[in-house]
Image 1 (cartoon, rainbow, N blue to C red):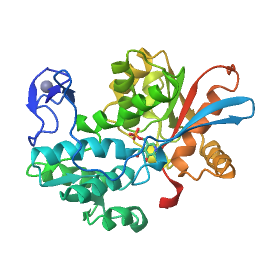
Image 2 (spheres, rainbow, N blue to C red):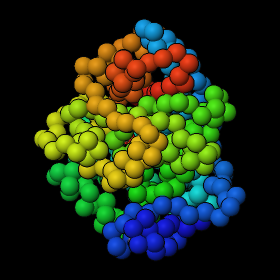
Image 3 (cartoon, rainbow, N blue to C red):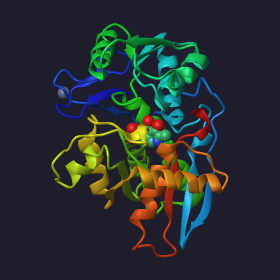
Length: 329
Ligand SMILES: Cc1ncc(COP(=O)(O)O)c(C=O)c1O
Ligand SMILES: [Zn+2]
């Protein structure tokens, strides 16, 4: 198993400190036939349920990924990444996410006995870091802007393994498991509607379905308040981003934007943006059914309801992953 630069083709070891190529390119994973990540550490991962529900006339398959051990689909990525690092004998990592990815990495590091340091801007609310702190992660608060935190994590990554959910392809090797589960549950869906910030679920689904031989049409959903991938795909000028209720997908500069656009296009899919209002309405609709997800997860349902408003036909297999638990906040 090696890292492979997507730009110049250079190879790197997966246990090294380099997290991107010296040419600036991002890494993909290259594996030998049959090579899989080990399963040394578990928090009791489950095959998440697929629940069919009718919204107006539309039957959707809800993939309940908030039922993962730390309460979000990020456990798929953290499981693969931390298990591989455990096998390689890595004893300490750094990561920079205050949200679900940070909690997932911290949880699996706790299970694996790997020291975990999470770098965050010091303005981050305490509520968001409660879970990682419970997993005994060392939370490093960096004074200043988000940029200052980015600088600090890069400095830290010079000496400690960077378990990044964005740069490290081992994370995507985990998020692809959703595709395999869906294949077992309903075969290849016609559509999958994915809330997208850095694209860790989207690219994982793409890799998984590619391996299975057929892609569903991927509909990527962004918030209209922060929609850089949508704007690039649609050739629209960028605009000033504002806060959004869907904070999990509010990524202003997604590193893998070109890969995400290429995956959506190859699948014959599309992109859509949603308003905060629609996201909250969708979250509330789920609540009324007994499904309690975080606001960001409402974006996927809102996107599906908007996208298929005029084009739904019965018999279409449409999957809407519900990514994060409402119990965290
Ligand atoms: C609940 C939830 N849904 C969706 C996403 C989107 O994931 P990504 O940024 O990898 O596209 C995130 C990311 O943090 C999330 O926390
Ligand atoms: Zn390179």
